[in-house]
Image 1 (tube, rainbow, N blue to C red):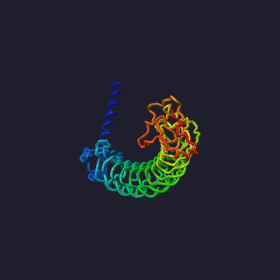
Image 2 (cartoon, rainbow, N blue to C red):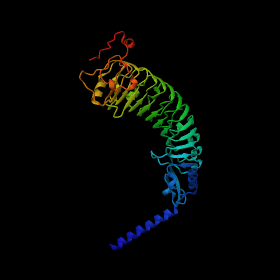
Image 3 (spheres, rainbow, N blue to C red):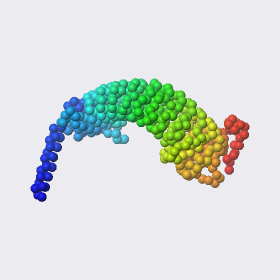
Image 4 (tube, one colour):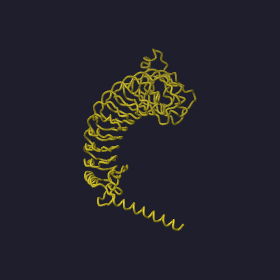
Length: 420
């Protein structure tokens, strides 16, 4: 037994020595080390991020903050940088400033490049297009300017491109939305413009909000789950969204879209459908049958406010947690399903102000939960509930003048039908 324990000890000691020998032999590539030197020189550090970047260290791969390495497939002793994260990412950190060095392109094994929030300025190095192994590029919340380098179209393995919250200009490079491996494209809050190209990449997430894009909606992949072009200058109908059966989040707000809302958008039961402040017309579908779905779910929101929707209010949105239908041209009585949903706490916010609605079927003596926010002001009725929950923007006048309501009531107005 003693001999067995001794043999096991000797074996473990041998393996430990082998491991230490291998670690001593493995060294970072000289090319990569020189690239890291150039990257540090091009950036200014106000957060002590680079304090661990001691170039006399025998093992930068283990000691440099933000640097991870892997073994070069062509060598048993050479380590190559495969992931580079610049900045701490801490909310109280000022981040880095300066510019991005084109020598990043010498890190030819790089698969992931991240830059946390700071004030890094200047262009995105076009040399990034030479890094065929890149899967993730995230350079957000800085002051990067100029166009998106067209060389990025040459990256065959690119999965995620996030350049949001910078000062980028120009149009999308031709071919960017056709990359076969691209799944996430986030370019929000820049100064990009021109019309959007057709999207042939099987994207899951496309966020282009707060730019200057114009024109009609392009063709989009059926794989899309998140889509936002909020706060651009786009126009035309939105019926091109009918095939997006996987869509969960949709934000087309604050553009110039017109025409009717496709029924399919109600059928898919989006957790968020934000279409406010457009020129959408027509009505809301009366009822949509969705197998196995009884509610939009917690946190759901539908905002169709500030459009020109007409007709009677449909009960189809009664299961949504927050519903904004204010500032339209809806008529008739509010369906009982909304009162039930409010009473049960399923719907917590219901804004219907600035329409031509003529009744709210809350039984006398009934009280809605304190958590409910309901606004019925400036309709063709005297609202008896929820007035104090109205936002200040609803205005001080609680109901419409008779002459305005007569257009929708054929001259038969009962302004006090909901009076106590």
